[in-house]
Image (tube, rainbow, N blue to C red; front, side):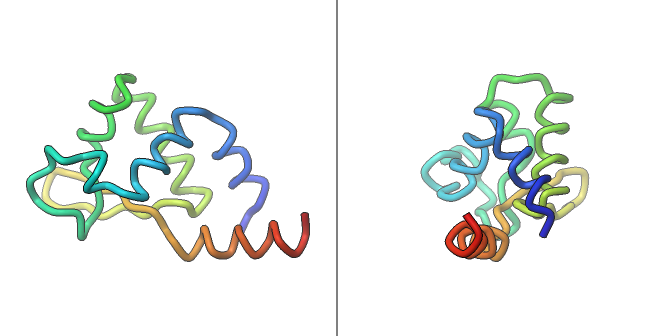
Length: 98
């Protein structure tokens, strides 16, 4: 776990919103018809943020490099979901070290 990468990833309002939305995808992405086992389609995330596709892709890549989200490719679509193990490890780090 690279704590510096995690805190960099968390230092942006839009990236924080994406993580919050992915915590409860059923609530924040009701228009996704395929279920949420694989995560949320990148197109749904991009649409909700209102940001450009390239910006959203960069944000998702940063969150993934930090280990906070995981991706699954299904056909031509990429789906993202939170890595809950990373959030548990981050919680333990903050409790012990900070």
